[in-house]
Amino acid sequence: MTAISTLPTEPRGKRPTRTFAPATIMIYGILLVAALYYILPLYVMIVTSLKGMPEIRLGNIFSTPVEITFQPWSTAWTSACTGLYCEGLKVGFWNSVKIMIPSVIVSILIASVNGYALANWRFKGSEIFFSILLFGAFIPYQVMLYPLVIITRELGIFGTLTGIIVIHTIFGMPILTLLFRNYFASLPTELFKAARVDGAGFWRIFFQIMVPLSAPIFVVAVIMQVTGIWNDFLFGVIFAGSKNVPMTVQLNNIVNSTQGVKEYNVNMAATILTGAVPLLVYFFSGKYFVRGIAAGAVKG
Amino acid sequence: MSTVEQASADRGNDKRPWRWHILVFLTPALLVYTAVMILPLIETLRLSLFNVKDGQSVFVGFDNFAVLFGDPRWAASFWNALKNNFIFFIIHMVVQNPIGVALAALLSVPKLRFGAFYRTALFLPTLLSFVIVGFIWKLILSPIWGVSPFLLDLVGLKSLFSPWLGKPGSALIAVSLISVWQYVGIPMMLIYAAMLNIPDEVLEAAECDGVTGWSQFWKIKLPLILPSIGIISILTFVGNFNAFDLVYTVQGALAGPDGATDILGTLLYRTFFGFQLQIGDKSMGATIATVMFLIILSGVCLYLFAIQRRMRRYQF
Image (cartoon, rainbow over all chains, first blue to last red):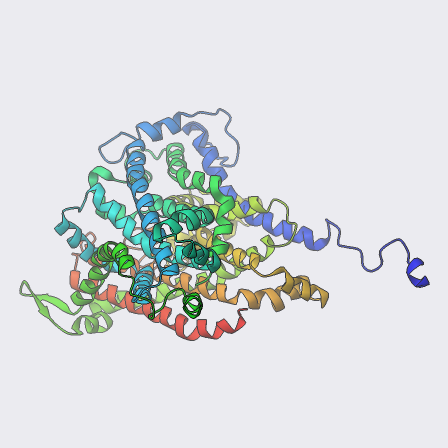
């Protein structure tokens, strides 16, 4: 009893590590170097896009622009040339938007319902259905390219906006369905059962119980689809047709054109513009992204 | 009572009435999906067994494969592409995944400041198109414009610089490392999420037993994230043997210099669609596609049946 009262007021044992312990410094050091390695190329891109060509020719790629000019940006947007047409990236941008928005919405709608049905309403053959779907996630898409060209041509949608939207929607399905199925399966079964007892049906449970609980996984799905479709190149080249060339294809034509003087600042501005959409989507929803991945994606 | 229990034991099983109405919801999706993914696959597999003789498509059995593996016109480039693809994959496994795991471990240090900043910075390139990444790195490594000679000069190592992308000996490694740079965010994010999922009780118990820091990572965290490492390995495998885009944008369809960066994806592209003097060959293209498909299928099967089963034991 007395021993307790005579305890020193200072806590005994090793002191907790200070903020600037060597290990902490090392951790921050490594992370900082790694981050720099990733930020530096982006920094060079931004700085270069704000310089005029004479300044770029001087070298000093890391220096901040002496004279900030937005000329390269407007050139890239309105009048950069791909081949004979000099209408700038805005054409490709709007094409990409027209391709992306319907494909993202449709594929997520279908995949979420599919994932919900596969997780909560198992029916005869649902395992087979799921395996076929999963199988699709692992097939290299180049393997199917040629027959796909023929099939879409037979359907009359080759080289049209509809064609490329259908292709993106379907190629997004396997992985999205897997994502949604895993997420819905991880929600407590009791919720589903309680709703059933209360007489809710297929759609009612989906819209009133499942969807409100699944914001993180919808965010992950949106990020995955937006980046996947926006960054797509091969499908765009082959299926979109010359009128609907997406932004990445146009960018490739601009930066890899061999004619004339290479305008690095315009190229850089064009590159940043093309990368902006997925980056913005990520910045505005990145908080949910990690949570969503933790909840759904890793459980194979 | 018993029916309720049975229903709750499993969310629907064969004992329940056949839920045809759900199948009705799913059928359109299934049909379109079959038309766009399964039929083309079967068609490709079928094409690989046919070849054009005298303007007619003739069944030739496995002759196309024999030509691909043995005929001097095809075999050299095929084995070259396969070898390069394996090197490409091994570099990813040795460089990308350990770095991804290490970064995830650092990011999951408790009370880390600016964690979101580091995570975002390292994940950024994953969100960018490979057209962009290829373009940036071509410039960085360019001997004329390049950032890297300049940077190496700063630390006095300019003599080490050489046009890596242009030399047959180093081009493949350079391209692989560009791809590693772009995609290190994926293993990092997945492992980071897996580490967040480790229950606090486990880590607290470890700390009570005096297992902290470095040894905690090796003895507690690493065994618990092994299933996720399995998943990123198989994702890397599938991704690498499907790879095409980055090589195409950085080195062109010919995958130069002198085929040094030629992988199965670029070989398939040239064979299917033709390039410059080469005329597109649908049958041989389908044959290469089938080989790619079989390689990936065997990798996935190996993962599902050999590795994943064994790893289940570590899960809670």
